[in-house]
Length: 345
Ligand code: DAH
Image (cartoon, rainbow, N blue to C red; front, side, top):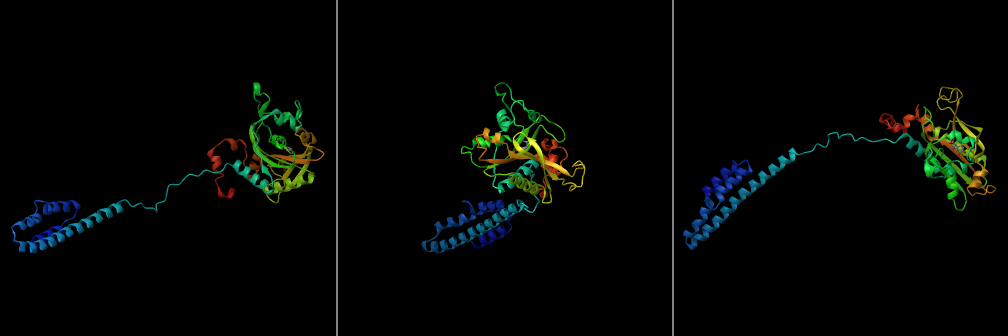
């Protein structure tokens, strides 16, 4: 037993792999191996000798098994460690850059307008782009054949839908909001959205964006309109902006005004953007015409209101220095990428 143990120890010391260990185990511990041979010697011994021999044999077997087991564990650990080492992920490597989209300049402008008006207690109203002639024109005091319709030639639907068109102005929201208000009480809304016209050049697109505002209440005056629009222009274009009101004409307002702002490029001195006038026209507005109120069920003796409308594209062109309106709708990624900057936010 002692010499066998010595032999096993020596062999085990040279073992490098689990396979070698397994082969050695088969060699020594299988049925026909030397360890078993020692056990089979029991049968030739007397009872007394069996006792002593048996104890020794047990201790011997325990030791041999523990030699095999501990080396097995050690070799298995080595294999695992090697595997872990080879499969290590270097988390310090720079990752692949994830491409991030950016907000379209129109979405930015719309959000800016909405935030401003919501902060003043307005709600955002959404109207359809396919509209009836009635809502787009007639109920805004532009009856069939009215010459002011010429400036808003748009796209008409055919056959049984011939009374429908692509809205040429968000002013249609005025009619919808008033008609939907069952109690005919106060209203304070802004309606941003797409509008359409038969236009196409560097500053006009067949599709563009407007935002409409409507306030209706008792005792609303021109002063409310003026204060609101002055604040609006300064908040969007900068506190230094000067605001000027000029008398104008719109069929749905009386009196009507056009609003100019001091040119933000030259500060009012005169440049190519403001065509040397120092002013840039940005808004149409006025006090809601009594006919418009009455046509949508409002008592014009009790209620007054003001309305305004402006092109969101124009504001974006000024604010971001976009020279051609068509690039806004061209969907060219190189154009959109220019707005993927923190300083635009
Ligand atoms: N809807 C007009 C346009 O598209 C703009 C406008 C002018 C809207 C006066 C208004 C307003 O609400 O009062 O040219």
